[in-house]
Amino acid sequence: MTVGQNKGAAPSALEALIIGHSPAIQRLREMIRRVARSNASVLLCGPSGSGKELVARAVHDEGVRSDKAFTAINCGAIPSDLIESELFGHEKGSFTGAHARRIGHFEASNGGTLFLDEIGDMRFDMQVKLLRVLEERTIVRVGSSDVRSVDIRLISATHQDLGDAIADGKFREDLFFRLGVVVIQVPSLAARVEDIPALIRHFQRKMPADAKCRYDEGAIAVLMQHAWPGNVRELRNFVERASVLHSGETLGAEDVAILLNPTAVLAPRPAFTSGPAAVPADDDDHLAAAHVAKMPAPGRPIDLKREIETIELEQIHNAPDLADGIISEAARLLTLKRTTLIEKMRKYGVQQQAA
Ligand SMILES: Nc1ncnc2c1ncn2[C@@H]1O[C@H](COP(=O)(O)OP(=O)(O)OP(=O)(O)O)[C@@H](O)[C@H]1O
Image 1 (spheres, rainbow, N blue to C red):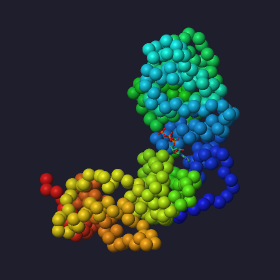
Image 2: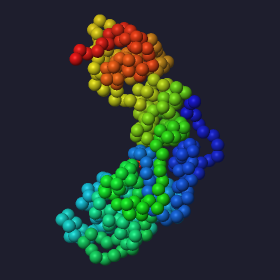
Image 3: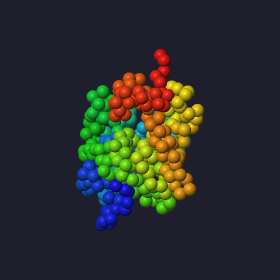
Image 4: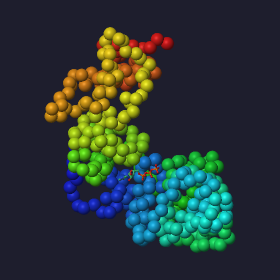
């Protein structure tokens, strides 16, 4: 499968924003359409980088408030002693440093949508105040006693398990139910790998034609097997890295495997040493070179045998380390017979370090 162009009907605004055709993404778009019609508070749960802020933006864009402000606040990034003033504003002189009156985000976004990211990081005393605002739809600026009405749609998000936080007494259960009148689970990328080709096309769309990469079937297979701990954000970074290092090229499985693990070349050497007789003196250069000279190009041939040996050498070095030095386990990791691995270790002069 190559990452070619998708033909078909023009996508809706929502389909153009939230990319993917997997059942999980189709369900997510349907949820967005439904909740957008209401004013209910929405709690978005899902791992980091899975698209929670994008979903919040989509709920806003699809709803009646789309022509009003959408303000995103990361609660985890605001010092806890400032968050009340950030959200509700303050009067001049209400605390040291309050040199002027300041309007908070609730007032500034009146009529629109407020997105509170990392809600699980909010301090307990602040949770009480937020609950009151949600129940009464009013705010009081720090240092003031005036009660002001606000008309806000609140969307919040967390990558934490709020059930655990509630059980540990760190998050108020009543606030959880207020925030999550509707709870939407944003799926991890690993749960919808069939969306990867469409997401790659999406991230490449704005690139100049000669910066784009093509991905052969092997490359796509490796991408689909990757765990994607950083989710769609990690994929976006990967696509950018690929275009910087391989613009205009067709990437195969090996290229992708290396690009997915860009720090591997910097990793400490495994607990195995290379025998001086069998391993070339420029071993490190040799390994590093594998990260740049992989694809042949007109006027730039490659030594395929050497490339394959380089990859084999790297794997033979790394597998025993990953297996805590247990050779039979390392052989299993490489799907080799134990005797074959020992033979290859001898060939490359890789030996277990004396304890
Ligand atoms: N389905 C999708 N289609 C297109 N782009 C997506 C999709 N999901 C996520 N992205 C992109 O991935 C990146 C990360 O998404 P976003 O910031 O919304 O994740 P998040 O879950 O809010 O992350 P965090 O928990 O770290 O705040 C953004 O560039 C976003 O536009």
